[in-house]
Length: 329
Ligand code: SAM
Ligand code: SF4
Image 1 (cartoon, rainbow, N blue to C red):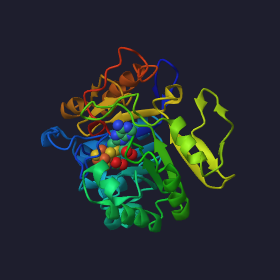
Image 2 (image 1 turned 60 degrees about the vertical axis):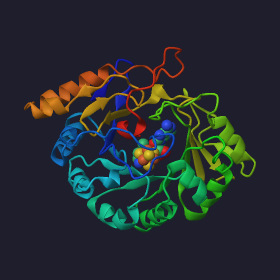
Image 3 (image 1 turned 180 degrees about the vertical axis):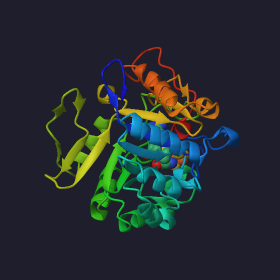
């Protein structure tokens, strides 16, 4: 198992399939000038499947989420999903995507064995979408969402980040829309993972702001009570249920004590945390002929060294060198 010195066990693997993307969300990527990973440095489909197999069969991983960059840009995605769905024990397979291209691919991904999708959509206003993502693709995302639902990739979750002065007034509107379409909406606090290193704590929209905004229109009750052990409530019943809304407060209410994640970048590096500044190279091991047991051992050693927390509140906090698009959110 992937255990760390604080007794946490990682069972959830996030796999970044590419650092490239067809959007340029301001909180993630710069408009231009970001250096892509070099093709030979990227793991091949074969290498990705091998690492996921080791994680699932030898290291106790039960959930695999594909992400990026934009994972739908990876040509071999459906085949990778199918090979992961054939593993024993079969992991739960999900995808985080911006939804562009999902209209074409949702059914095939479902047939390959994908269980669920999270689609990122921050606004219902096409003009605001253009400002936030620097691309005019709002309609593609809405069609991708509908296709995901129709293909049974459910529950379809929608991830939204609120940015000051752009879409920070949209929380109630987004929730009403999500409930109407049967999507489960989750707000994610903006984290310091933008390529431009422009994040400012003072300016960010906090979970408190989001909840206050939602409460102007809906009654929210914390699922499982206000406090769930060390982690504050993340899911809220809307107007008594059955609809729910999530608020993921990685900055203002961190839940590192309950973290069960391990991450693999598109170039084969293990990261123990989104905010880690060290990585462990598995690509080198793969390409120098290491056995499955040696790779598993290296992965375990990496996770054993996982830090207690993100360090965001530490005055010496330094943003990781890689932006979110190259880590895999
Ligand atoms: N391209 C896909 C997408 O947008 O869903 C997958 C990768 S993206 C990095 C994964 C998630 O991270 C998205 O929901 C996105 O909104 C979120 N994200 C990116 N940068 C972020 C930041 N600085 N703070 C919080 N969430 C961020
Ligand atoms: Fe691309 Fe996703 Fe980053 Fe937006 S958040 S730029 S869609 S990787």
